[in-house]
Length: 288
Image 1 (cartoon, rainbow, N blue to C red):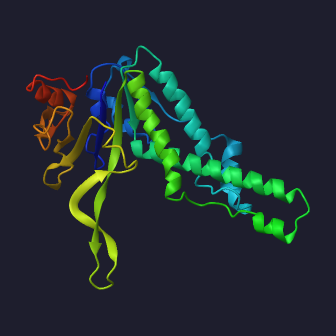
Image 2 (cartoon, rainbow, N blue to C red; image 1 turned 45 degrees about the vertical axis):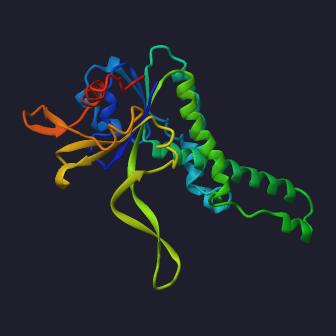
Image 3 (cartoon, rainbow, N blue to C red; image 1 turned 135 degrees about the horizontal axis):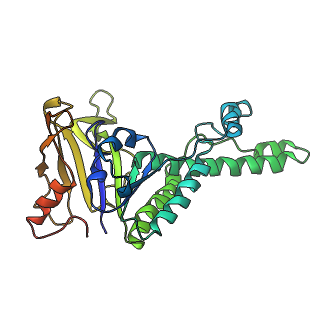
């Protein structure tokens, strides 16, 4: 099995790429990205699309009124339930013999849900602890024991969400499924000395981008593909191989070809077959 991370700017065919791969695909559409793709792929027997269930009316009301009691940050409310829903479905899908490829679109949203669900767990634990304290007559010492609600994870607390994300990759390998993580891009930042203040600042490196979201996505992937536009044109697209299990021969290779669109016009783009044909020149296969 192979794990592929593909990332790049909006509209660069990131969500389209998995649809061009052979085998039946199960797509976790966490951003409604497939709405712009499926019209091109009429054979629905080759893929299934799953979207999280919308919150029910009661949960939505709670979401809009949580700030009244300052209990759980509404930005995290419902994320634990959403995470559990995704995990349950993911295990079910990986157990199916008819599914060859599992796609998360996007991996950034999966990471957000995973980390924020853990924050919600911590918030709920704090709220439960505080509630058990106030059930008794409060002394001044008891009041000091009341814990303020967490609004974000500390640096060390990201270890648990990171471990949970790694389980998505490990589970795919365990069940011998190809895993495709579709991601947005974000600017690369590098530490740089501020000559005015004498402090180290985080500075954006012009023209360089990386995977947005889980910071171990590239390390855990066999293939990393970056999508780009030609000459700032949103019409012509190509991919750059950033990481390859074959070796350094393919790293940095740019791939694109001509496609004829429904309206008869031609555009430059890419698909899985273009990548696979390139890999076959080295007597290897992309999906192993």
